[in-house]
Image 1 (cartoon, helix red, strand yellow):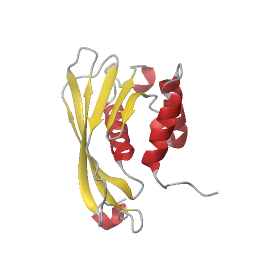
Image 2 (cartoon, one colour):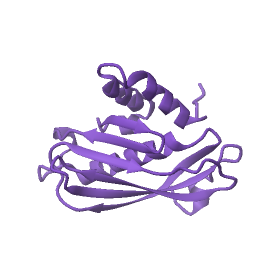
Image 3 (cartoon, rainbow, N blue to C red):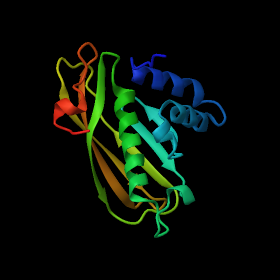
Length: 174
């Protein structure tokens, strides 16, 4: 069985365009996304807005994402930020460009509790002729609007014909 890796941004935008107007469409889109990307799907976040280069994702605090201190686990926050930044990048890329995350930096500002909102915005390049580093930030806020964490995702973007280098080619060990 082959896996489709072509034009993920166009597929994401088309799926969002079909599902988001429906009652429960954002929830359904998020479940389909979770089926397509099982690891991210385990987080249980819901995409509430998706535009080329912009995403808003919500995460409801629940037992599955808590740590021993009764707040949202640090790695759940990293996953939420990576999901948001990844969707922002992928939704903004043209079919001629693809990418891979090569690193993540995170800064935690306070304990995360309650409903969390992650937002990410980027101006993805419309064309690329060689492998290019590209950084995208996601900010995560709690229900009162306080910053909980920032996640900076480091990407390598490249043309589809030659594609981005494998993570091992960029100095990142697997």
